[in-house]
Length: 290
Image (cartoon, one colour):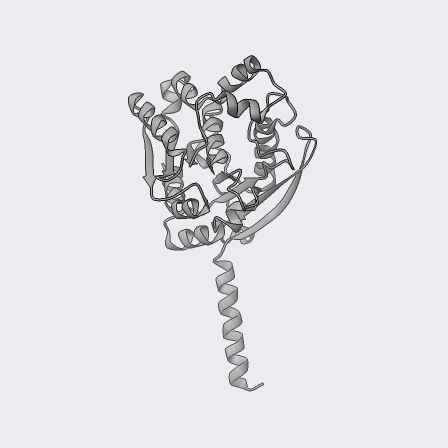
């Protein structure tokens, strides 16, 4: 190898090392033990550039995956594999438009049955309890997270978008930002709930559903609490769920709830969620700076 080749190799090596230091890292199959869910649960995590070389603490975005769409694997890897999370985070941080933050996605897929972010009415899968009593405390103990409310956000797509709504509504003291995308919200539909929980009787389902009725949760929530959350709501114009999201938007306008609302070109798929993710990350970053 000539001296010139050696110099070129060293320059390329230094450039690649410098680039690596300016990029965040992703681990997409971490695990923790859960007593509530009786087993190990997986999660994916994005750590911002320089995390390993400093002692700085960061705000956290809890980013919830969807239950689909067909042809995709709905688990903690979705936002990384389909949503290009690492690319958009690195690009946004490098440009100064996105704040350096930790992004975490728990796996809400429990095998052949279904994806669920609820405490199920049959008490067989209390994911909401797991999320608040085990998952968030574990993340904040394991990683250098800023733990004040103003440094914690929740977002998600489809069923994860619905959860982004009711998690922030159930625990307004936990989150300063909520970003539901293509949120799976609906009024009570007997056929949907009885199909999802065939072993439950309708009166029991009706009573259980009250705690996840986003429309009613907003109406019942004290004004100061619902207005203390920065809301970012987006849905595709060709998404069947756009109707429900528009109805909720109208309700929020009547209640004078400050929120950003977007109906954009797109369907209920990863193409749409990828397209809106950069703007959502900028919104979260701006809210963290308030």
